[in-house]
Image (cartoon, helix red, strand yellow):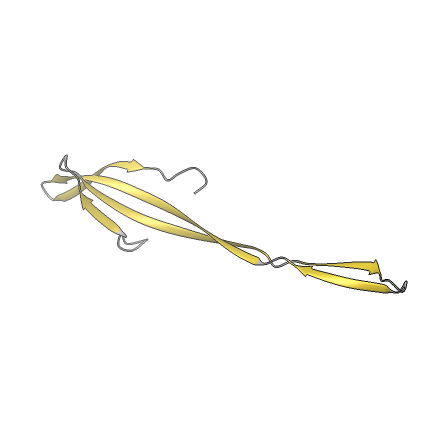
Length: 87
């Protein structure tokens, strides 16, 4: 918590454990390209045409979950769930 801040979710589980979950978001922007083609017009003169691809942004959310069990001095982390592949 000192490094990543408070978790985005904390849940008490039916088996007595507590789940703490942190989320990390990554953003990837691509596109925005322009392609210009030169063609011959009906009169034989060159004519250019530019096509634009839109810019797109994709967000990937990665969740990190720690499982804890109540101990004499608070909550003790006992397990960790890895995020999905690619995070």
